[in-house]
Length: 119
Image (tube, rainbow, N blue to C red; front, side, top):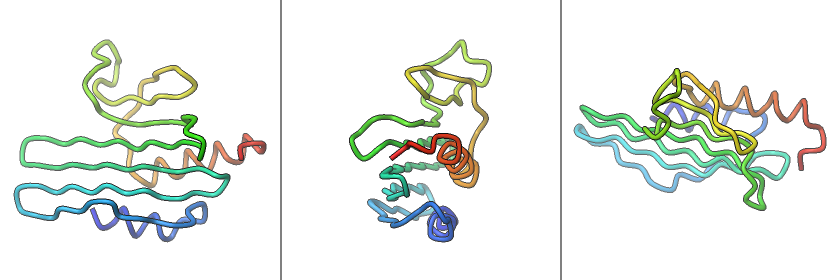
């Protein structure tokens, strides 16, 4: 959980990290973060871990709220080959593996490089 904060703070595309909520108990681990990125973007992170349950969401958007991409494991795309893991992008949903913060930052950085006009 604390690794997420460390990775964000070391990233060259992250300008600021705000921990919105943090619970670190034996029975539950929860972290919610708002990270300000370059190119006028925000990254909202939620990770919840209990003994029997894991939930995650990495939501990247422009400052105006326009979605860039979201990776999550909300169990609502049952026909997805990687169910429950998936990625939302450009009003579409794609199969995705269980991503880490490193995966997400790498993909966002690639998108920044490809879409020079993203700002």
